Image 1 (cartoon, helix red, strand yellow):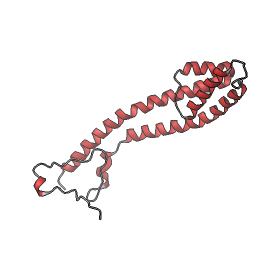
Image 2: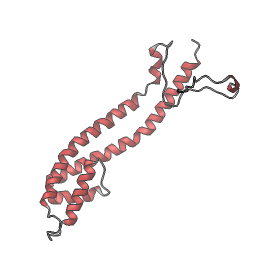
Image 3: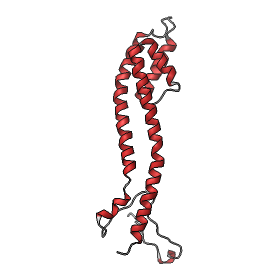
Length: 167
């Protein structure tokens, strides 16, 4: 049999217990009009999350096409053991293709662009465009924590005000 907690403090613990709303989530059980929760929303965070998801989706689609171009460039380089000295270029192209597939920036984006542009100018331009987009995504993603913290602070304040009202 599973034992459950009622959430109500034991009479022995009431002197020590203090109630406070949860850190992240609140459940509207009953009794308050739905308009009351408007102050609890985080619209900026939602817009930010939508922007991040849209950019990730766009980069994934663009990265798939770029991966195909890089695949062709890898195929055009000499295979290991052919003695043409292209083994380093081939490894660098494979590494870049993997990173783009996994939506990660290379350690040296400028070197990656130079490598690809040296083999195919159009592919180099597309690589540069994808890398700029990916760098923007990293910046956009980094903005989210501060935005969420601010909006959570505001919504918790609104929740505390609602909870303090006599109903």
